Image (tube, rainbow, N blue to C red; front, side):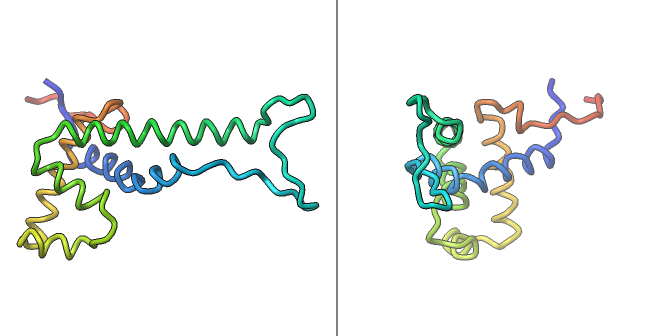
Length: 141
């Protein structure tokens, strides 16, 4: 049986989920060419090869798109209640957490306890969960 460190795993998953909206924005932005001091655009070298800057930007775009896809798949693996909690906490941007607590009719303590459980389940469902899940050093069962 796995000895998973709940708190460290949740902390890792929070870090990823808090980046979600930035990743969404990044995955859908078009590359803007660099403007030099003389206001010329640098996109391709003289040999028509893609510049390192363009290549890096494309890779960043693809990585962000893949990360968003993995996050969405993991959230979709969860039950409706946990999906709703994660959506309201990390995906939806028009309500703050206090408004969400009021909507749920929960105390602050109850809301965050349930959110922590949803985040933990997200970490378990996430493809590449080895990046999120932390093992405990304690081997007792």
